[in-house]
Structures are given as C-alpha cells and as structure tokens.
Length: 153
Image (tube, rainbow, N blue to C red; front, side, top):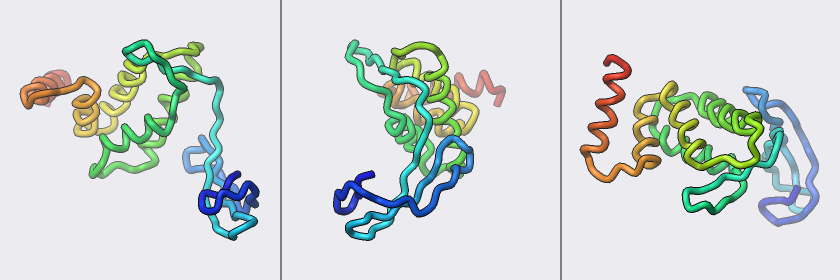
C-alpha cells in the first residue's frame, strides 16, 4: 500500500479489525520509509459495475462518489454515521447482486432517494433537489407537499 505522505510503496499492517457493520476491514498501517501511520479500508466487491450516464457515457461505479453525495444531503443532520454507511453499503450490495454489469445513474439515484426517505426527510428533500434538478422554490414546495400527502403529516 502506497504511503499517502511520502508515496513509498511499502507499509506494515499494525492492526486489523472489522468495521462496526462488518462490511469492511479497517487496517492501521505504518510506512516503512517515513514512519507515518494511516488507515485503509478493505471491502468486498462482487462484480465490476459500469454506470451509464444520461448522455450514454459510462464510467466505473464509484462507491466513494455515492457516499459523498449522500453525506452532503445528510450534512448537519443528527444522523449516526454508521446508518449512512449502511445505506451506502446496502445500495452497493443491491447493485452488485442485481446480476447487471451496467446500471443507469438514474437507478442509483432512485435507490439513494428510497434509502434516504426512510432515514431522514430533510436529507431526502436535499438529495431530491439536486437529483431532480429543482430550479425554483415552488419545486421544493410541491415535492415537500407530496411527501406530506404520502406520509400523512
């Protein structure tokens, strides 16, 4: 594993343990050249997935990109980071076990919205505002009104 501080290619594993949700292995490493310590995470990847964008261009699925977009929607909300991590892992697992090697970006967005809907309504609306490209305040009002109707609030 390359050191993020000095780019040396060798490091020693000092400690390994499963993450709280058991979906990854957390490893503490120490660079053999500069002595810096850093953490890496090792996750199971069942298959390579290509994400097909709306313009028909495709790119490899990036778990970190999905996690960042969900974390942005959940910013400043009192949510346990473990629940957010479980949501991201669940979406990734659904994609990997679907049997499809290509998935549309809109499908990933729908899965994220579905997960956020059950996690936090504000994060759900935030994510939807970007995903559905809200351009005016009335877009928020209509979407929030539809949530109230469905939720009976």
